[in-house]
Amino acid sequence: MEAVPARARGYVACVALLAVLCVLRLPAIRTPWWALALLAALYAACEHVVRRRLSGTCTFYPVLLAGAFLLPPPAAALVPLPAALLARVEQRPGWPRRVWRAAQPSLAVWAAARVHWGLGGRDAVVRCDFPYALVPAGAAVLAFCLVLAALDGGILAAAEHVPVRRAWRGLLSRSLAPVAVHGLAGLMMAVLWRSPYGPVAALLVLLPMCVSCWVFAQYHRERAAHQATIRALVQAVDIKDGYTRGHSERVGQASVMIARELRMDDERVEVLRFAGILHDVGKLGVPTRLLRKDGPLTPEERRIIELHPEYGHEMVRGISFLGEARTAILHHHERLDGSGYPYGLAGGQIPECARVVAVADAFDAMTSTRTYSRARPVEAAVTELERCAGTQFDPRMVSALVRALDRHGWHPAVTADETPRGLPPQQPVAGSRSGTPR
Image (cartoon, rainbow, N blue to C red; front, side, top):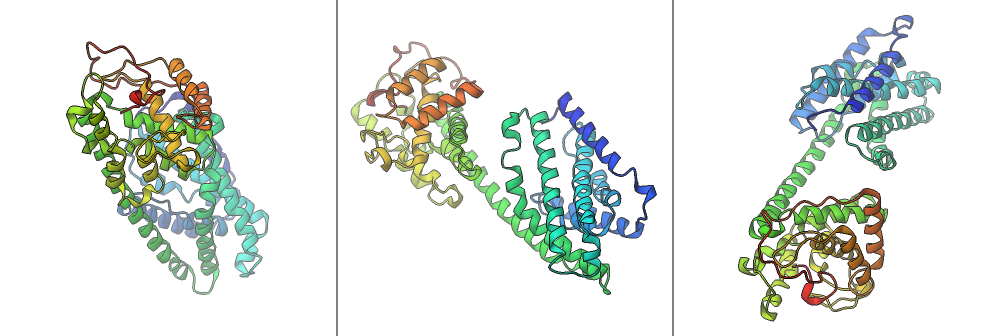
């Protein structure tokens, strides 16, 4: 996002003020400045390597948490500062983003240090008192995650206009496990730092962490390559079938709305987004003249078009991370009463993800202008979906979409470059075999 909304700037300013308040007591406490300087320089170097060499796909927390275990809270809060000030900011304006990168981890590491020192963790680290040392360290990691999740949710609500009820959903649960691993590495660093071998031995802990970050980065590069392939396939479909341009992305969006309303976990929501985006990729195997034909299709032409789910399934079979999205691509034109295609599955035989995409696909088809029908109002499309629930569509999926539309609304884009002339009278899109979305 190029522009930073005013309320997001205000939020960042408040977080920065809190971070400043956390370090005000620094002159009044005994601070090992050499350790603070070394940890701050080490964190800045690690962040540079992670963000530049490893494409910025992970954040390096062991040094921050080691600072929380070794330094007084006000001093620990300064460890992230050089990394934030020296890092390059890609988007403009840069100052709120730079301030955010400094203030957010500063508050989190201050909270972790405060909890750790309050539970006697400093003495446990000095004496290598295991397993007790794990208790304050674990509590510090939890405090670190809680502060990060709270601040991240706030910035999502302020800057991205994410609804408050959803802004914090899943943030803590997703971060707790990886940060716990980083916390264990940070504790090992702190213990070795206090050992007779000193800071040099502590640096050895970073080697396996760097390797794990490299592996993580390789995974993300592979995933990015798959997503680029998906974008290319969708663009090819849009070029071939110009009247449905943007349809794939909107079906993906509607599928996500249904999945979230059904409280599916984030991984399945992402899979359903891919399923919605790719549901019509098999149209690449259908002659263009059929996709762009004005007027009704002949039975033979319809049989050719009805092969596109199988074509699509074959095209994405080798993309392993799509998971059950492949079955949604294959079965999104099945009907609950068994009269759909390609295999005539009925009821529970149809995979759940396919039932989600079927509703999303039909909804966008009805609310978009095509060669064979004009766009319907959202209310009319919802009425048609509810009429066909139980025969063509899963009533549970229809109800979920209706609830999501009531909560968030729907703002479809025009799917054709211009409205075609001489359209035939609008035909039922969802309620009959002849009106099934192409």
